[in-house]
Image (cartoon, rainbow, N blue to C red):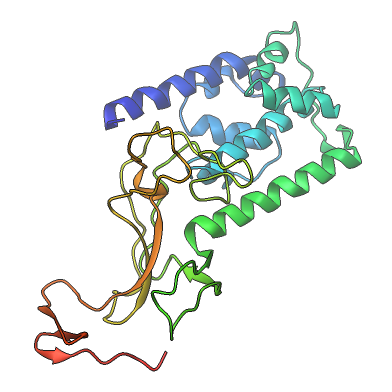
Length: 280
């Protein structure tokens, strides 16, 4: 999707929100026009649902925003009288459109005080799991990600089966470009071995500022540019994955842009000098 298509899509989402919530704004003591103004409507609606205003930032983080939407759908039906667990399940299964049935009631009743909302052990349990997954996904996407070394290409430094955490923020965390994906997995769902994401829509390539440059002999994890791994997608003639879903490789960086690299008798030479590797 190009920039214009994303703007149209964003405005379309605002229209859906307005048509499904404008009476709820009135019931909560707000003006209905606030439901149509992008971003401001999210801030006001979070206030109605007794959620922190900074949550509006989470609505723009790929993958995490999908879970936040589910939380807000359930919160909405609860704050307007639908407090049973099944109501929350219906809100999620209908992708939030269950809220329309509440919005177009004769006079939606807003529960001003959070203490008026009935809470069951089931709701508390599910809520705790969802927030744990959101926090873990945030760390997984932008700070650290666990890996298991699959091959012996870095023996003496990393062995097959070694478990480690890889920092994403030192070299600048990449914003996920795949907007519709299952959290906490890379490209394949465990057990069923099917794709864990939808190829469209895609965000443009973006990264956060880096804290440091890659140095020679650093061990780095990167996405293999020409993805030819087919074992999970045998029905496809060729595997064309989004950039953030390409296969992960771990290697040692022995050359930087501008370096002259030679291999003589099995040893790497950089700019005419034999590369000195650490003991591990």
